[in-house]
Image (cartoon, rainbow, N blue to C red; front, side, top):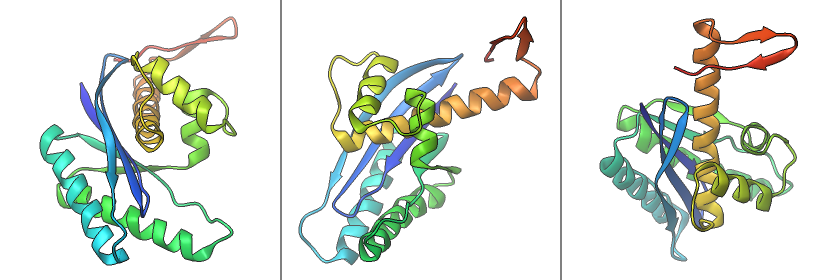
Length: 177
């Protein structure tokens, strides 16, 4: 059993999602958004750090999954995003939690099965995968997708390391322990 926290960093809104992975089953625990007021960036980074620390204190995750920064056309926006991501990562690292990074493409491929999936497709698969009654906020859904991606990645690696995956007549079958 592992508790996994996903983080979707942003300088205005940072999403978080917490799931439990046990025996290949994923269970939704919590999700939400840390919304920053129109304050200077340094104060918003402090809000991100404090908000992530509060979620960590409540759920004590074993792992944190965070989306890597992508380079957009706007360098200033990418730099702010990188700083927001850094504040979230430092909160996890200071709590002694290992942080795993995934590209947006890896997360989409893991959750939807297609690396160029649209945002609404990711949200829909998060709802289905975690058997939610409604759709979480966009940033929270992205954070949950990151957590699902990590659970899937770890499950695959465990299966490969213990020889739990076999190929019979061309059909891959997996076992997760």
